[in-house]
Amino acid sequence: MSGRISCGLALSVLLTAFPALPVVRRDAPPSAAEVNDAISRSEDYAGTVVSRVRGCVPLTSEDGLVDPRFVDWYCIADGTPLPAGERVIEFAIRRDHGPRRFEMIIGEFGGGCPPAANVAHDLQKRVTVPNVTGLGRENRPMMGSMIFDDDPEAVISIACDYYGKAARNNYRLSVTFTFDAEGYHLQNGASEQLFDNAGNPVDHAH
Image (cartoon, rainbow, N blue to C red; front, side, top):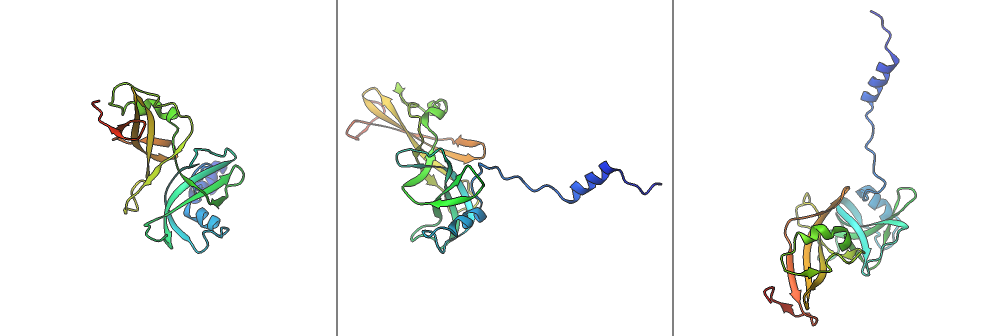
């Protein structure tokens, strides 16, 4: 029996002995190590240490503007020290389209909901009030509310409000989404509200 080993078999053995490292998607949210690297260059977050990133969603500003030069995230994480009265750390973080390196950013930012125009078909399935119009008109992301609980393994979600008209009244549909590498995922359950131009609630039957 020959003691020689074929080149192909040798390569197979080598690849088995040294499995490939997982590839990090360039558009993936930051890891705890990447957040801590960004924190190390931020005076505003000096002394903060993130132990685990629970979840991130695309970031937006109060006016729904997104800077196309960057990939921006709004995240919830475990770490120390916690802000007074808070159970988690919430932060905005940015990566430009060059090397995968993040920077902490400060401002009136929050988690961004998907534009109504992008999810209009799915939103319409949640509507039970008759004659709602204009629900999918908005084509820019608006700020939502991050939802989490004390279970560190629980999936982070974001609550979003979408507006339309129902006859003479204004209409609001409130839904929640989760977010992952595949994008936003509309969750079961929704609430609807009608209100007049003064902001007073109107009964759905009227």
